[in-house]
Amino acid sequence: MNPRQVVSRIGFYTFVAVVTGFFALPMLWLAAAPFDANPGYAPRVPEKPTLQHFSDLFENDLTMGSLWNSVLLSVFCMVLVVASAALAAYALSRVRIPGRDALLYVLLLLSSVVTGTAAMVPIFLMIWKIGLLDRQFGVVLVLSGGLLPAAIFILKDFMDSVPRSYEESARVFGAGPLRILRDIVVPVARPGLATIAVWTVVNVWGSYLVPFLLLRDQDKQPAAVVVRTFYDEGGGAQLGPISAFSLLYSIPVVLMYLFVNRRYGFRLHGGIKS
Image (cartoon, rainbow, N blue to C red; front, side):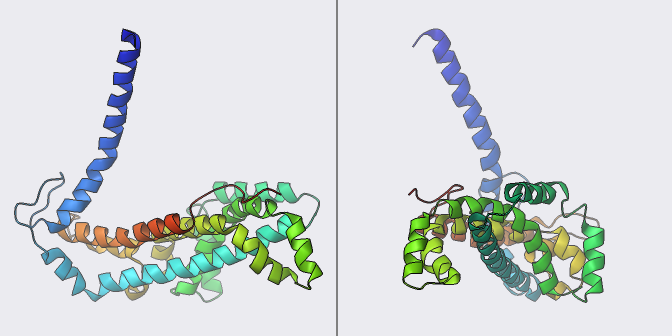
């Protein structure tokens, strides 16, 4: 290589190292601070390793209960989004209606422009009017409704990739639409369904504003909301409990990602070609 290429290569690897370090430092802090008796803001090897922070969390019914609430909200939203998006995407893929593609783009555009923050006042009033305020079912409906347009848009490509000859063969043997969807379409579109499932869980798992506004009872609030309780009256962060809780909070999503990625893989485009 000539000197210019050497300098360019050194500059590239330096940039990559800086970016990697930028993202690695928080991970190093998260791995070390929960076991440090007196954690600071900078990552360091614990001088006095301890499990006291975890012990305090396990004795706190509010924090451990919030993790269970996060699991419930995430699972119910995942089931509702994946099932509804699969049905809607299959219908839009197979039924020829005027303006079908325009409808998909409009739904996706509106879901991006009209965010949850901008729509929280009408959403709050609507949930209050129908009697779902301070109920987890209301939070599931709001979060799922916000995620559905993008989920339908992504899954439609997988539905389009399923050869129609498969469905025609199934109809010859008397299979109905739901049977075809379950036995023919879903197995082919499984990577897309897995991607939508993990994407839904991640979005719901980290959601703060909607549960904070719609759930008044702390016993019903998820972990993303309850973490605010780890601050003292002066607004100072209690780094020990926060770091330990953050580590526990991140483990379920990481395990789910690794399992789904190993079992199904992740793709954002169709399954097979005819």
